[in-house]
Structure formats: structure tokens, C-alpha cells
Length: 490
Ligand code: SF4
Image (cartoon, rainbow, N blue to C red; front, side, top):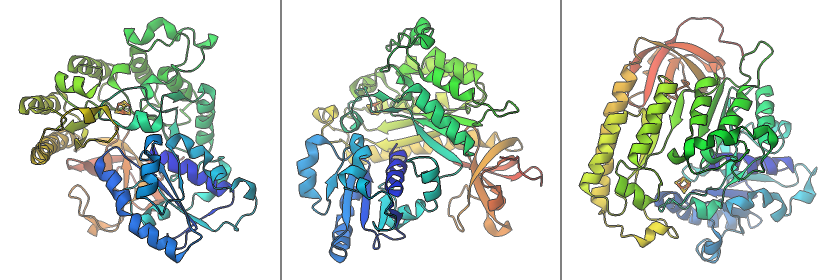
């Protein structure tokens, strides 16, 4: 979501005549888009303060904007004290005001007079690298309105902002506010525009995409949505569109010869409680929807889930997964896990490990719990010692590394379609990556979102290539294009 927000902000600035800076030293405006989901991410911003202050001394006209999840209303005064070099703080929901608040709107048309911008797309990147990441986006920003997309192959498409859930460890409901769904037709129209612009992959984006539509006005054309009522779950849609309707409408966008106009449609993130039967049916019916589901579980123990405020039980989670796997055979599944949450016992942690063994995820994003100021969980005792959190995290990652390797090895000798999205970096120490002595390499993703390294050069980027897999690591596959043919036309 932060990357998508950065693309929107960069697009707005480019549209009023700003130009992208090649270095932060040459920028007149720096926008820092913060992440506060974990303590480490916030610390990175703090670590940049000295650098930013020095930049401002060298260039007193420079303006610095801080936005993202670290900027919360209750924290504004504290932020001003902690980050004196910052001129403007914007909450995530205030980002559309960026141009106005900087007084740039009236400068529209005065291209070149505003100097340059530098923006960070995530806090974790180096400043200059982040600026480089936006290279070449200007033309697309003008062509598509106000979004400076960082890729010409894959696009983020936000469908719902904010979150109504109350996970006790999470800062998002406080930083991004309540759920606001974008109008159904606007999203479908944006998807159509992306298809016409040649995008091969679109990811529908939201903190909880599964609750899309519940806050929109009912419409007669969605009267049938009420009939199934999310299999009796919490959200009562009463004739409003849901994610299943949206996916079906985007899938219905077709080329002249009847193929999906957007060949790969993804969505993230799904809350297990709101994963409806209607959505599962849409995944099974729509050929454009990729066979991959990211379904955060966070813990394998019901008592921990209750303390986390996650609303579901492990029984419910497993039932949803079983149903999806029956409806979409071969679907890959990834998840998020927090270890060492308040009060987590060894036995409770073991239940999370057991869940990994049972479900056999393709990928797990795991983190040790760190309390976020202002969240309900700060009222609980953070009683798992740091060394125990670290040990549990390492233990869990080791289990998943074995499972991931086993699952990937099952692909050796088989063929799979890979959407090539990048030229592999010149040198890598990743043990999944190929030996580059045998020529240029590119990387891409399968429909199941598996990373694949393959022989080929930049001419393959943007194309879907049939690849035979000959090597597997825990985090990636390696293979060769099956034929020398020109790649499938875009
Ligand atoms: Fe945070 Fe829970 Fe909402 Fe996800 S669903 S953004 S973890 S409150």
C-alpha cells in the first residue's frame, strides 16, 4: 500500500511540473513515506534525520514532507519535536492534499521551475536507490492521470483504504482510519485503462480487500449479492458490490479474441474472517485470477489469536483453506506470522509450527512481535524475552525453509508460465539464484507467485515465457525457456 501511495504522490508532483531528482542532494523536495508496522521500520526514519538535516543546511530551500503510517494525529506534536527538519506532516488519508499543501497547484504548467523531487517508496530502501526507482515514470504519469507507476508490467490498484478490524497489535486502523471503498465503476474503469496501456498483471490492493463494498450505497444491479450474505459471516452487504463482483467484472474485460484483457489478476490482503464462499467461487470461475492466495494467520493458537483480536479460530481458518484448495486445485498459499506475541507460551508457539507443517505454505512472512505505541496490545504485558522471540523466529523460519524447499522441488522437471519482470542483478549471493557464468539472466513470477530465475535478456521483460524448471531452492526456482520462439506477444 505504501508503494502504491508513493506512486500516486509522485504522479501528482510530476503532473504539476516537478521533475525527478537523480540524487537527494539535488532535490528541492523530499517526501518520506513511512512504515510503522514494526519498530524496525520506524527506526529507519529516525536514523535518516541527521542526513536530512545536513541536506537542508546545504540547500536551505529544500522542503521535506513526512507521511505514511508513522504520522498519526495524536502524534503530530511529538513528531514535530522529534523531526525538526521536516516541514510538513501528512497522515496517509491527507496524501491527496500534498500538492495543495505545498502550494504547487497554482504552478501547473510551469514545468521546470519547481526543481526536482526525491521520494522514498519504502523506508527500507536507500534514499538514492528509491529515487532511481522512479526513473522513467514521467510519461506514464501524464498518460494515466495522477499515478507515476514504477512498473510498465505490473500495477497496483487500490480498491479500499483503511481498516475496520481491531487487531490489537496493529497501528493501521489508527493511522489509515476506517474502511473506505472506492466506487465499483471507477475501479473497473482504471483496470480497463491499465489493460489498454499494456499492463499484464494487476493487484487489487487494500488492508482487507475481503470487506470491499460494505460501505458503498446499495444498488439494484447488486441485489443478488445479499442472497448469500458471505456464508453467514459478519458483513451484511445488502445489495452492495463485494470483492467477488469486482473480480468478475475485471475478469470480464476481454481482448478482441476473447482472452482476459488483464491476464493476471491478484488481490491482497485477505482477512480470513471475511473470506466468503462467493469469493472462493469467483476465484475458481475467473481465468484471469492467479492461483495464489495470501492469507495471514498470525498464530496457530486460538488463545493467542483472541489476544490479537483476530476474530477467527484456527478451525475456521483451516476450513476456509480446505475449501479454497478444493475449489482451486494447486493454488499456492502464503501467510504472515507474528512470533512472541504477549503471553505466547512454548506450547502455543509449537501449535504455530504444527500449523505450518499441516498447511505446508509456499511462503511465510514472519516477524517477532514489537509493541507499537498507541495500539491496544500495549496494555498487555510484552513478556516474551527478546532472545526467546529471536529463537522462535529462527526456528519457524528453519521449518518453513524446509517446507518451501520441498514444495519447490516438486516443480523440478515440470513446465510453467513465467511473467518476466526484471533483468537479474549482475551479482547475487542468493543460494536460490543461478550461476551467472552461463549468460544473462532474467527473473519473473509464476501465476502462483513463485520467483523464477531463467536464462534470457531484457527482450524477455514484459513477456510470459514457458519455462522448464531444473532447480529449486526454498525461495525460488530456476529454469530455461522451453523454446527459442519469440515470446508470447503482449
Ligand atoms: Fe491491521 Fe488487522 Fe486491519 Fe490487517 S486486518 S490492517 S492486521 S487491523
